[in-house]
Length: 202
Ligand code: ATP
Image (cartoon, protein in one colour):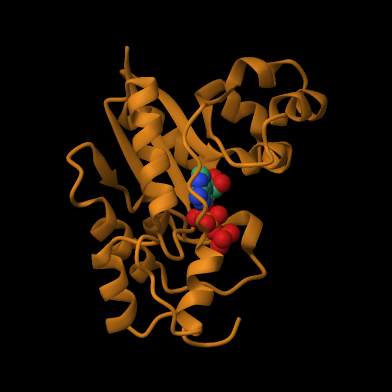
């Protein structure tokens, strides 16, 4: 069966950690392609402010354009409201009936999976592929304590390289006028500057 990778995120902004992790997971799991899905309102960040969904989407398109096997979906933007992954994956199952679905997350997200809406329904639809993040090597054990042994079956911790970059750090660099070189693709940096994103204090 063909394998589809899905990387959901706020992408505020998308950065080289997202791109390089997706690339590493793509190679390690032999994925057919990876679909990046920007959230409209991410359930875990409802109390925060974000760049407009259209800007986050545009930056995701710019960052993934050079890769033939990366694609962007506006499914959560079109649905609007709070973007629950389970709702999106139910749609994906219909759109990609012949694929095994791998939902890519950073290992830092694994200990939070038990808080995700309808997580056991999600386990029926996808396997979680967790990209390595420093300090998060025992997350499968933690997830088993939180969710039971199904976690061992449904979450794979991959041995991908470490990419020490986060959207939070990038927004801070922009506010402080620091260079974004190596942190985001050049086209994304140009988009941020041109549209004067991330200049206001958080
Ligand atoms: P923020 O710093 O604003 O919290 P973020 O950099 O974690 O944002 P998100 O868009 O919220 O970015 O992340 C989407 C997914 O990508 C999450 O599962 C997260 O764990 C993962 N991720 C983010 N940065 C990295 C990275 N450097 N390496 C591996 N995975 C990452």
